[in-house]
Image (cartoon, rainbow, N blue to C red; front, side, top):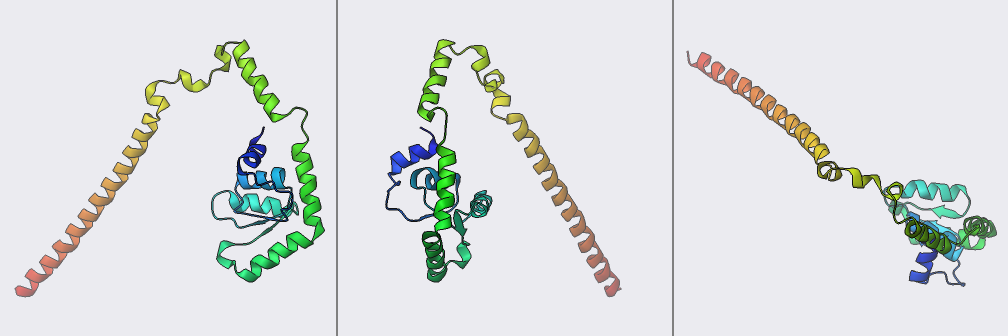
Length: 183
């Protein structure tokens, strides 16, 4: 089973009477809309890669996009009515779903094959991740953390020293001016 089919089984959201799907545009929601439901979507991107995902779905003609700041009852209903009653959204989604589900081998069978492959070859050296070859410092990125900490501390110290220098110059000039006024 691939990710989308797994989501369908877990959430049981692939209901045959579903007419539309509202999602934030994350990759799991997109897979769920394509694989499980095969229905057009209304998308409300919130952050990260969601806006890019939503734009791609809108370009394919399977979704309508709304911004979270502009959502009202009216705009949401308009978007839902558009994706439900405009048959091109459903037709485009069914094409996308058919392309996604057209595979030479089922995902579960593929996972079983690769698991058995590793078992047959007893986890040979070429099957091990490169992370196993790293030392403890590299594995936990301690060298990178030390470098970044040094850079941040240097910038902070230079900023503090510069501010102190400027502050001393300013207060020294004011004390000289006060002494000159007294004389």
